[in-house]
Amino acid sequence: MQVLARQLSCSSVRRLVAPRALPRAVVAQAPRAFGSSADDATLDGLEDRLKAAYGTIEELIEKRVAIKKDTQQAAKRHQTDLENETKYGCSKLAMTYLQIPDNLQRAADAVKADDMAEDKELKKMHAGVLQMQKVVSQAMKSLGISKMEVEGATFDPQMHEAMFAMEMPGKDPNTIFHIMEPGYMIHDRCLRAAKVGVVRG
Image (cartoon, rainbow, N blue to C red; front, side, top):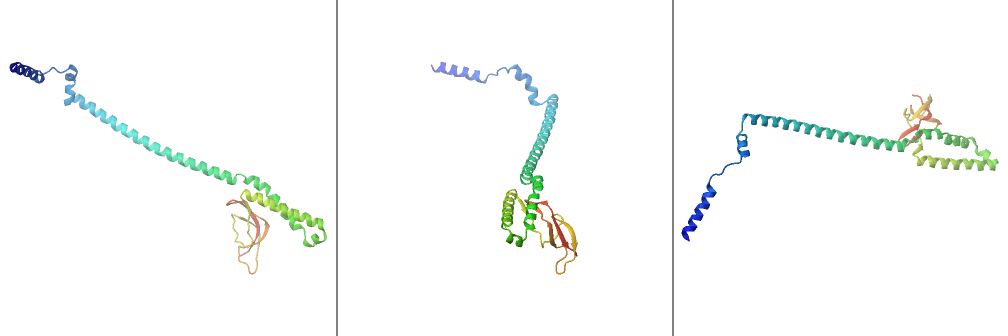
């Protein structure tokens, strides 16, 4: 039994250490593993392609960043346009309707206190005009339209239109002392410039 065991173990060892034939595919590829001139050329080509691929990737990344930036700017401009449209979209219509408060003010100024004291009907009509002025003022305020307070202010060509100028003792030059037609603002913009008289310097 001991002799048989020794023979089996020896035969097993021989099979494990005995050289085996390599597959043909491995043999065919063996020169490539150790590097040949053809393989070096292939590697050089791959490196060139890899560099080109990296360059393309960098270009795409730069384009993506630029497109994202342009998109953000476009969205910001769009938001600004929407806000301006909401705030100032009614400017042309508001300019047309400014004749309503103008005419109401003329009607109120045309009535004298003495005349109202003698005529109760006239006094009632005048009260109606004043009430209508309040209603119109509230409606305009809801649209962001407000009347300028310019008397005594310094003349500003962006807000005021000088209709005449004259010397006024005791008043600073370029100061508004008379209002011919009131001006109006829509939010933070001038809707209609006030027509004024200015102190000459």
